[in-house]
Length: 191
Length: 101
Image (cartoon, rainbow over all chains, first blue to last red; front, side, top):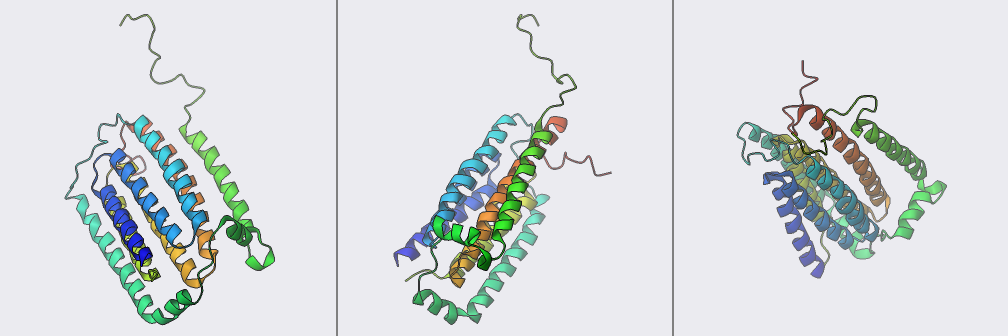
């Protein structure tokens, strides 16, 4: 019963913060709302017996990724159109496919619910699901032959991260062979 | 009384729809990136819900990999946004039309 209450609280917080991302005008407001969504989802993960993912959600998403986004928003804050109008009638056509996709997903979930509701309920009542602690998840990741190829995927993801780092450095650095576009301000104070 | 996975799956679907609406409606590059993040979070929630249904940890491992890929995607996306901003002095998707014609 108490889990239902906690889930309801976290779900309401996540939905309100997600709507905040949708209707906010400045990217900083949207980033703060998105951090709220991620913290609420972390709470839901810990309700669903996965403390490792709940911790990673706070550390990686709400900590590292959103910190990077907020830093770049602050660096580029001088954009002339960083604050956009809230309701742009021309762009509101985009809500229609989102509504259609959301309705289709909810209908599919409801059909799945009606299909094997009894099986899921007895599976949840019979035994608690495997808890996703660090030890359990690392056993699945590196556990050997019976857990199929997660270790190979782990190595591939490491390669992906290395590629992303090199690509980000190449994209974001200034040209080294050219002088900078804006001359450095002189220290003399003439002007 | 534990909550059913149907509830968290419905929540994931609604979050996915809101993220898709953010991508489609907003004109700012940062909002587009944050909408993609929201959709990835919703898919993570669905993965964890199904891992709970099936009683094993494979769904949680996939959610872990989705987090790593999201981190790489944000790094590259922010670098591209900075490059576009440096040439166009703007963070609007309408200004990024170099490949249009």
